[in-house]
Amino acid sequence: MDSKILLFALAFLTSIFTYGQSRVWRVDVEGASFFSSPRAIDLNNDGILDIVIGGGVENNPSKNGVIAIDGNSGDVLWTVKSRTQIYTSALFQDINGDTIPDVFIGGRAANYFAIDGSNGELLWEFFEGGQNESRKAGFLNFFGTQFIHDIDNDGFKDLLVTNGGDYLADSTVKDRPTARLMVLSSKTGKILKSARMPDNKESYYAPHIIGISGKEHVVFGTGGETIGGSIFIAPLEEFLEEGSLQNANAIVSDSLKGFILNSVSTDLNNDGQADIVCAGMNGELFAIDVLTKNKIWSKKFSSRECYVTPSLGHFNADDTPDVFAILAKGTFPQYSMFEILVVDGETGDVILRRERGFNQFSPAAVINFDKDEVDEIVYLENKVVDPSTYSIENKLCIYDVEQTKATFLGPQRQGMSMASAPLVVDLGGNGDFEVVVCSSTIPKKEGQLPKGTIECITLPKSVSSVRWPGYLGPNENGKLDN
Image 1 (cartoon, rainbow, N blue to C red):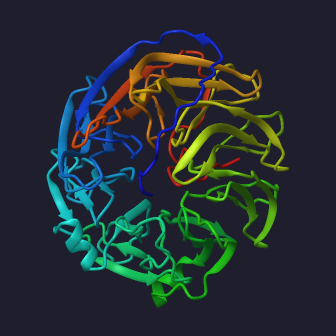
Image 2 (cartoon, rainbow, N blue to C red; image 1 turned 90 degrees about the vertical axis):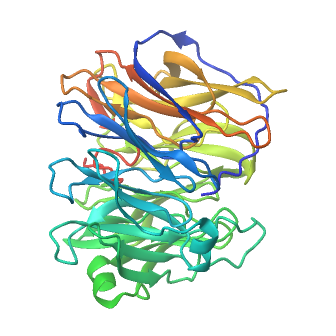
């Protein structure tokens, strides 16, 4: 997804319950804008989880394309250079046999890396040329969220990815290059399978797997901010055997705007089968029964667009998971207002809709603070401090859906949360939770690069459960078990 977002001043209203939590560590990163969400893994065998995140800047080389941080001290363990922005969230698998998980991560202009988790050295790089060279070679942006089973029989799970999205095309250009669904060898980076999108559209959607009647299916999406598209489901084995997606089923379509946000899945109708919740750029939320391909419910919000991948939690007293998302009033790339939204997962009824924050494009985590039946939402809330200078600050917000009350934790920091979800994690495995958040400054002068901040903040000991710890939930694939 392009980061062409115009800033517009607006009044900022807050519910005013604020108390401090201690900062564990903070890392300031030059030349980095965080669209990637943090992931946690132990890279130095000290028994404490470390943090890996993608960074860099669109169309600019950066020494901080990928960053690994010691979860105990906040020291930078290693960094990896990139030619442009790295925005996917890291996956981990040891492929070099040193017992330390290695890192798989990618982003714009055919950048995709396998990185030695112990020292940051490249194990492979998908494409070594510049962005103009990659574009001429037919390789665009990478989007990926998960491994699939080992299909080249080398003993390692392989990578399910989409390659697409013309990062140099103007928003008025409707004829875009067709995206491709791919499987890459995690050992070598070689393309093992590749197929064109069945509707010949572009794609910014990271594919993922859902089980249907005991068989794995791949879910993928097409279209963009100004290009129509669909959400498709196809049998994984058929794609792997035939290298084609022509028999994929479109379960949701829109002729004007596409589907760039990952779907999430959980059982909404109590039939034992995970259903799909997806958000379209046109401001419509859908819940789809994957067995029948019918809508369980849909909710359209006029004059709104959705840029935030939904999160799942329990926001009312029933047993069915509910849906959190954020709506933007306006049309890409001009937005005047942002609303947090909670929808009943069983009925599609709106539980909560409140105007909050500014340029809210980051997904949320979901936790339970007070040991009741209703979860709370965890996200970074951006605030305009000075409209004349576009000065923006942000702070961690815990939103109590039941009480419609915002509580702010930790320090206020300069910049804004771009698209990076907070990560709620027990770094030390001691039962106490921390939250890792990332934000970036907005350059005010031509040629100036943003600066990024990664912070780890302690959470109150009253946290009783973590339902949705970060981007794409507890399994990092969008699925929530009931």
